[in-house]
Length: 346
Ligand code: HPA
Image (cartoon, rainbow, N blue to C red; front, side):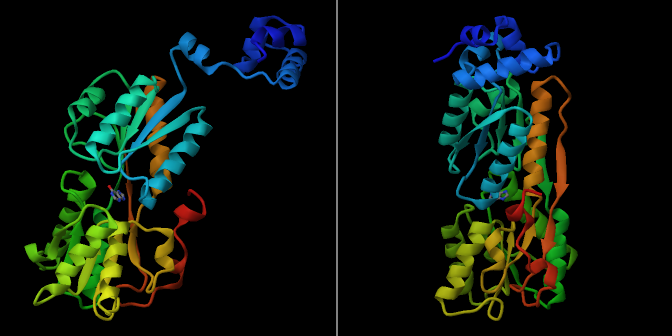
């Protein structure tokens, strides 16, 4: 394999000049730059990233630990993180925690061992000792989507409260009064915040959220199925099921169909998080959409600011309601479009 010395000899310049060209240093003549790049190409030279990181104490690598890579929300998030990191000159190594705190710790440990420059995490729970130590230690860290209260780390997230209020207003306007929720795990901020937002919005309309209408899910489709089954077995089932994530909404849709019932005629359905196939389901599903691509990009920018010594910004963006047909109302045409997150990472 060609070395930097071979490139210098081939180009007829010093090793220092080759290094300056490779690092985009301005003080190199156009002619020398052209000769170095031609030699790099001719010899197939590839800089040794390990040697470079030993020299600079930087790996130009970010770690991203997400809670569930099978959830389209997190897949979209990971894609935008990777895209923004690449634009800023960083690579990303992804760890999928699969909603398991032990796996999350494994990924955090492995990434720290690999000397990543910074870490983005969407925590699976309230924080293991390793996670808390890492947050308090020297490694730059940013929480994205989920966060751990009381830990002093920048947070990049969406606030769904106003969108949940818009959803409840929409449901109330359609005449629905018995509204139920399939909640996510209370140990996650997204799990607890979505139930609280729903409860508060119902209260504004003078509606209760009885325990029987608060089903505990785990952000996976099977729990959506199970909780919806339990709702439908009640003597007085709810008129609406609001699933706190997209996968539980798909499970809920399955459970309704398995009984030969129809959405929205027999029961209405709404979801937190819009996903591309909600326009293709029958009926298209009313959902709260997050600016997922923008969240990923903002999280990377905050982390790179920390790494490069600039003050990082916590960022809170708004989510918004996309009305389709699953709650009983024909959709206005624009909401029938696939969510923007799938077409481009807008
Ligand atoms: N879990 C599942 N889906 C989500 C989450 C979450 O924490 N946040 C946004 N979509």
